[in-house]
Structures are given as C-alpha cells and as structure tokens.
Length: 67
Image (tube, rainbow, N blue to C red; front, side, top):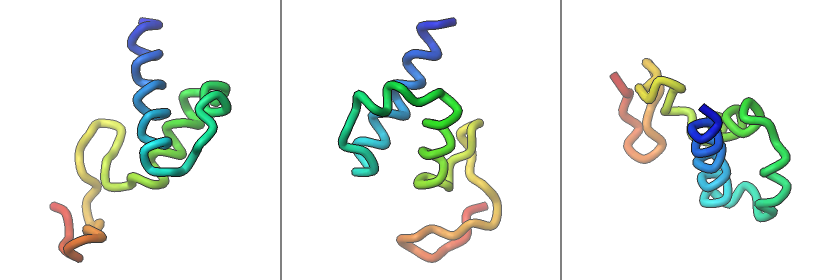
C-alpha cells in the first residue's frame, strides 16, 4: 500500500515539475498527497481522479467539448 501511495505521489510531483509549476522538488516532497493532487488537478482539469474526462469542458487546443 505504501509503495502505491509513494508512486502516485511521485507521479504528481513529476507532473508539476514538468508543467513548470515547481522547480523545487524537495519542497513538493513535503506536500501531502491531497495537496499534490489538488494542484495537479488545478492545472490538468480535464482528467478526473478516475481517469475519465469531465463532461462539458472544452479542449484548450481545439475548443471542442469533451463527451
């Protein structure tokens, strides 16, 4: 269980660094899983926790609604 949580936390950290939202990796390590997930979802809103698309949102690139 801890391994899965650690992997998910690393995923969020990698994504936030990749998005350019955080340069200090060590600081992100101090964040809770909920804080990391909330920040990730703020900048990657098309994906829900379950991995599906939210209804009614439009793509920033195409302007088309996701269904």
